[in-house]
Image (cartoon, rainbow, N blue to C red; front, side):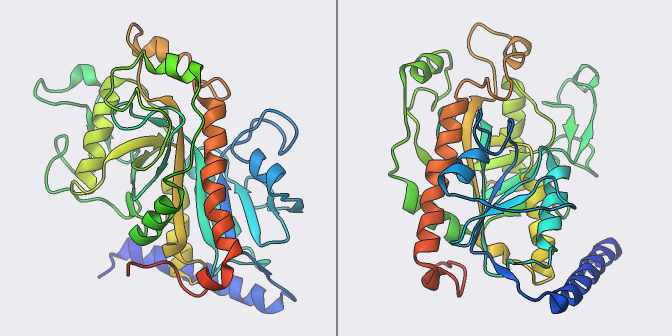
Length: 354
């Protein structure tokens, strides 16, 4: 049974859907969208300068049709094959608002669209290497919680960050709030991984040199495609101790089913909007994929403090920034191409476990 707050929010979504349906009746033609690529940031313009997460999609997939999205962060772009790219802006709030604006826009038919959230991320050197790509099965919110300054916590606590409504870290049973833990369609995620697992991602002398500074289990591996779960939050955290917290936080909220691999800033906002849009019949949540590629490690290398390492973490200057931007496009594009090339196969229903 839904709680009063959940019921009120669900009714609000349905009301929005009703108004959107009225607008749809008045719309002369709806644009059929097959795939939506979701990027989170761009450095400058959409084309022709240093690329962010959007630019390669625009340039290489010829997304030349521009549709203003006044209620969102940025205009959406399309080509004549049914491929769309959206730019959400950074942080969960921007992402949630932009995806909701797009999903309620009466110009677009998104009911059969596949969604690929493709962006860069921090990665744990214990589980993934620089320049690698990870398809997520779980995304866990890292913002919702209580917090006490670590200098004031009890001596037997491992962290000052507590789950909401609990009295100590990782108190059982875990009780995630709605919108705090997202499970992706496991069959679709596995399909995407199987399709892309053998893609060769570029390695370099620079990446190999950077990796030598880290002692994580996976740190020395060349870039690859893997399965790996994500913690999502608008706070950009950094350091070995917070890596340990994130590892425990993801395991706690997924009942041990998820394993922390990447950290990013938007995806719980995006997924919550998609969940609500799905409840209104406007999108299919089972057609959502999360792909994150590692631009930097989430903690300091040997010989640096966490503070000194954080001072080096800036967009465009991450240690594997360009390899991760390239990997997001290369791996994501393989899935986009397969879906569009064989659309009659994939359009009727989302991929399911056989």
